[in-house]
Length: 305
Image 1: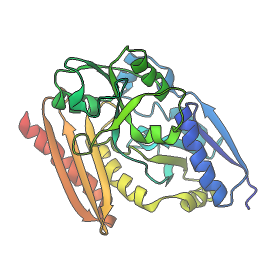
Image 2: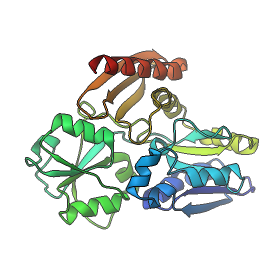
Image 3: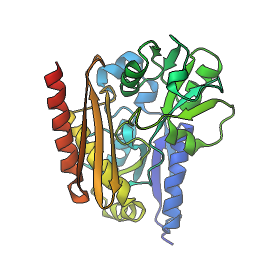
């Protein structure tokens, strides 16, 4: 057992706390028992919708924790991988990824008879803060009214239960991790053939200060290699596109038979056009695969303009 204290920081939502406990469990299993947890609100949780859009969402959910790590006040930051900017502060690194959860989106309604998007009533309201999800819904069900919503999982589900919105779409990974909520609701998984996930969806990322060699070694002990390969490819794609929270981009990289398969879709800003691309290559070429996929998507979308 190693007695040196490890300080971990994350946001103070139920999901963030649950994800932090998953990291803590991994650390304890690896022999690190002396762990302190700090939970705080991020700028992304508190600023107005207008300001959020102005900044493009880049780093707004990680900024405070990033600063604590850079200032050596905490050792590790725990985040949903999809919230981490494609370009990190040069002093920071992603030291570990946890095993990736289910990457699919889920449709949540109050009506237990609804099992898929096509069964939603005509002209009903659907809540989402994701341009990717909004773009897919406009394609699949152009009659639906998209309502922008923000807040944690519980807040969003309550809007459906209180009948303020007929349906919402969330990441299945979040619900799987929280498991127990104080209320019941109807949900169904959306097939990947209908909606691809956001880059990084379903993965937990652990950030650290690259100057801290001790912490770097700890991260290596809890890292999931397969998740890292997939996320390297997806994050490389986002970086090349210069994407942020408001980029309508979907991507999923999976490892199969020793190779990596990357599928992606990029929508135009008005959601009316889109480009698809699929890449297959060796695992060691994960990052270059993401870059090539991004270049192809940008080129294809430009020809549609």
